[in-house]
Image (cartoon, rainbow, N blue to C red; front, top):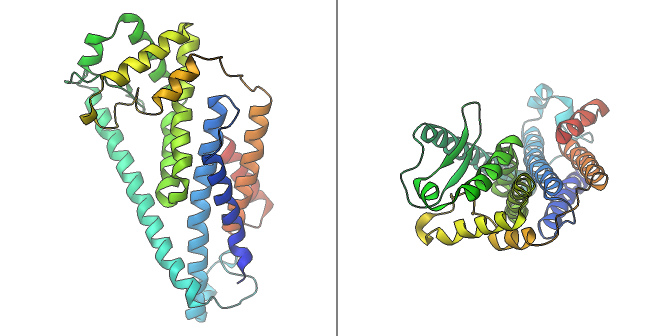
Length: 297
């Protein structure tokens, strides 16, 4: 083993941290794709590196058992893994897998709860709530408070915004960001920026559908101002970066980045998938290409 084992993960963490602290000059749709891909791949790289080192440490402790481990999962130089590296790798890998599993289970529970509530809409609360519930039997979940206090034009904005979330499957982007932030706390800024990018993406779709950017901005601000402090973070429509979203809608529409967006996304997908493949010791070119294609879907 040598310290080059950790270089790909270090590069991924550096990239994720940089993207989490940099405002990308891209349309929100491309920003969301870049951030989600980076967050998910960095989480996979971190878990893969930890498990890889842990396996090799176990092989150091029990060389006879190494014969039953696939060759790609072992270091090529057969150098022993010191305990000062192997023991933390085991602990951190176990903790990372536990946190990732807990985050996934919590997310699925929230999704199932939202789908069950969908059948009893509107919600019995005066807090203005609008939530996109993904899935075959999903839809837009509204509260009585929103239906009573919002005009027909404002409700149209809300439906267009939430429909954008459903149409583009934004829950997958949110899950990728949440996974990265759960496994690696340094990626929390990236997750926050990803959530904002997803909301901005839906805002722009609503503005394009209604043809009135000012109306969309007013609707977002109205929902945010009507939400009491005790309502919690799950009021969806006005939950993330309200000030930034309103300011963006009152400004010039963002460029679609028809050329730069796809190029940056493809380049980012290739780099992150390649680095992730290295951390997982997938040396075969076919496997690396497969990961790159999955990252770009």
